[in-house]
Length: 118
Image (cartoon, rainbow, N blue to C red):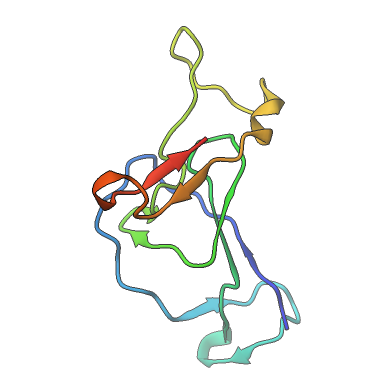
């Protein structure tokens, strides 16, 4: 079995309506990955782990499955921390941001909305 970790980047603004689940093929760039070869040199496989980074430059939230929007994973890099001048904080300048591990709780907010816990 090949264990795949997905690291994605998406825009900070997201559409709220998730897209239907996607099932397809991915290009084999690993020279020897296990999978089913399809036409055109593509390997059919599956993503086994998904990580969302709700706050840019902070730690990841591991998801078993997660909705997609037209711009990427729902809530991925949607928020950022800023200093008193309004400039975004990054791990280059503040390495301790990596220790902040936000958690997204789907349907946990009053009224059934999603909740971000930091």
